[in-house]
Amino acid sequence: MKIHRPHLLKHTFNVMNRVRQTASVAGLSALRVAKGEKPDATLLKETFEQLGTTYIKIGQFIASTPSLFPREYVKAFQSCLDQTTPLSYAYIEQVLKEELAVDGMTLADKFAHIDSKPLASASIAQVHAARLHNGDEVVLKVQKPDVETIMQTDLGVLHGVTKLLEILMPSMKFASIAPIIDEIRLRMLAETDFIAEAQNIRDFQQFLAVSGNTRVVAPKVYEELTTKRVLTMSRLYGVSMVDESLMRQYCADPAQVMADTLNTWFASLMLCNSFHADLHAGNLMLLTDGRIGFLDFGIVGKLKAESWRACIGMMQAMQDSDYQAMARI
View 1 (tube, rainbow, N blue to C red):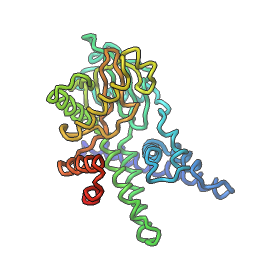
View 2: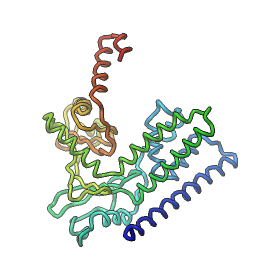
View 3: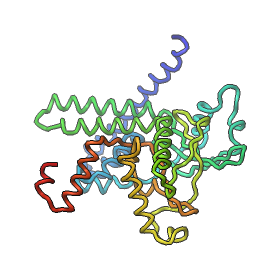
View 4: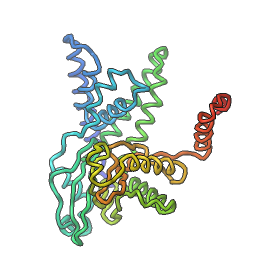
């Protein structure tokens, strides 16, 4: 038990510190309202940004779910979809040392070079380019310090507050919010397990191999350099699939590339153990060799066979204008 005591004390301190930070930021926002500032979408967005990781992820959910939230909130939270301010490499290096510099090995033993300037920075992780001693160019997806503790604490508080509001104000129908919070909680915590993400990539690669799909690729995972908080993958080079002029540098028909992308994704719904559930322009790349790169498998979904059959049936009914069949489905 004594072995685990320092870790327990650190965890407890981090939880208490996070609760203090949350109360402080929330208190300052409440003070702004008390001074006459309108409690609108902009104020909520600014508060979420100050609260960090968990709330930025919730902001991303709001920004990308116009069917659930008012237009002014969806618009205000669009900035949460942008990259976050990167952490100093010193913090990232510490995580790398904790995860990979084990058994007497140093980071210099594992990598010939690690670029201190990040390629990308998101709410949960930061991505850095690196090179192995054998010459392989890789990327390191490194979880930011204490992210899991912060998210567990924040989501636990949100879940508790939602349940309390259901009891205190049942007429306000907070019950409809609770399932959304629970779904966000499951998705966000799944994103903190990079070993699970590595398995998602392997599942997708197996699907590509079995289906004979050579148009699409996913990064190679370096198992020996991957842990729960560090994911090491081969580096893919290419361009964004948003800019058609850039795409034409590496393909003759951008429309066909998009069709191949969608066909692959739809096929994965049924044929892959899990499907990419966060497919957007930032997670796609047209490679310099003309192939399509699927990136970031932190969020995946699983579609049951009966759900797939229902989807097929609905599409067929829509094509046939069979409204009775659509109603039955």
